[in-house]
Length: 378
Ligand SMILES: *Cc1c(COP(=O)(O)O)cnc(C)c1O
Image (cartoon, rainbow, N blue to C red; front, side, top):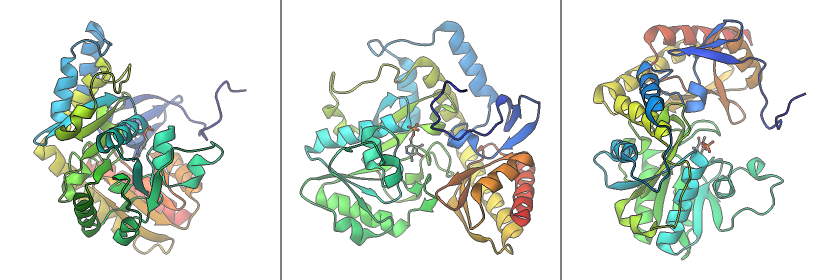
C-alpha cells in the first residue's frame, strides 16, 4: 500500500545518488541521464551548484520577502542581462504563468488570452486554463474563462480569435510536453507584429526552453522578438524548486505593493542555486558548446536512425529533441533504461531527449548507440 496519490505512473527504480550526468539506483546500477529530470538539472549534478548550496545552507536558508534579498537582485540581473525587464520570483512553472496571466490582465484591463492547441502551461487553474489540451482539464469543473486556442504556426487562426478584449497571446516557442513542435520564424515574426498592431502583450512560456536548453539563455533570442512577458522555471535553479516571471519594466508598476506575492518565492537556497546555474550558463563559450553538442547529437542520431522505417521525424532545437515514431513509447523507455539510458516521452508518439547541457561527446555516443539498438529491436 502507498500513502501517496497515484497521480504518477512510477517506474520501479529509485535513484539515490548522482555523479555528473549519471544517476545511480538503490542497487548501484548507473544510468546516463538524457532527461535532466524533465529539463531541470540542465547542468547535471554540477559541483559548483552543489558547493554554493552547501555554503548557503551553512549560513541561512530562508528569509521572508519583507526584507532585502541581495541574491534575488543578483539572479534577476543575471536573467535580465541586456534587456529591460523586472523579475518576480515564485516556485514553479505554473506559478510563473499565473503571475504572467495576472500581470497581463491587470496591465491591459482586458481579460482574454489567446493560447494554442496542444500547449502546456501547468496544472493550477490559470495555467491549466491556458493549456490547450482537454485531457489536462477533464473532471475539474469550470476553468478560468476568456482563454481561447489557436492553431500553432497558423497566423490566420490567431487573427480570427482577436477581439477588443484580447489582453495577451501566450505560447511556448517549442511545445515541449505535446511533442517538440518548433515555432516557425515567420509565424513568430507575424505574431509579434500582430501584437504591436493591436496593443496585445506577447507572453512566452520558457519554462522548458529557457536556461540554455536551446543554445541561447532563452529561446526567444533565436527569433527577432522581445516578448513583453517571459516565464521560467524547470532548469533555472538546476533542481531546487523555483519559478520566475520577467515582465517589461514598463509593465512593472501594476504589480505594486500587495498586488501579488509568494511566501517561498526567491528563497535563499533557490536563489543560490539559480545564481550558480546562471553564472555557468551566461557564458558565450558555454552556450556555443551547447549548439555544437546539439549539431553533433542531431548528426549522429540522423546517421544512426535514418534507415529505420519506424522513425517518422527527428526534430527540435539545441538539446531539446523529439524523435517521432510509431513504436510503443513506454516499451522504448523501458528498454532504454535496461540499457542504462534515461529518456522521456512527449505527446502520443514522440521520444523526448533533454540531456544535460554539460553532456560529453562520449556520452552522446553512448546514448546514440543505445537509441539505435532499442529502435532496431522494437
Ligand atoms: C513543465 C512546464 C510547465 C509547468 O511547470 P511546473 O513547474 O510543473 O508547474 C509550464 N510550462 C511549460 C512549457 C512546461 O514545460
